Image (cartoon, rainbow, N blue to C red):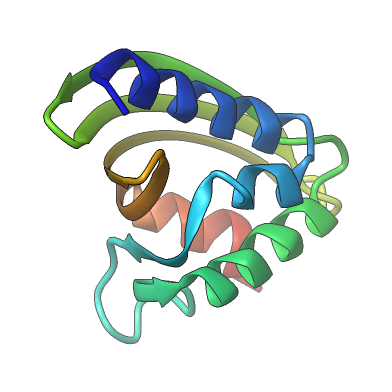
Length: 134
């Protein structure tokens, strides 16, 4: 796939995720895809290198705790070779009334027209305070 095709697939992934089409978003990933999330051991229950199966459970769990689908906005993308770097913003209200507003940087790698590896950088303190803090 070319650079524009990779960038289009990224937009499709986030559009599907934002429409609560989790299965459709996951279909953008290779079967052996990995998803790494920033965070120190012991600081977050969800962090480090995850398989597609594990990130699927995370996505479905997130969707189940939100009042409405997570609003996602791709701010900017830069592509080179088989990689796309992007800035994304999100907003959503959880069923407990907390508001999740996040800014991310993603580094995505592509293989055979699909996303095969993701590195996700975000505000881990906000993740903990919104999703996990009692």
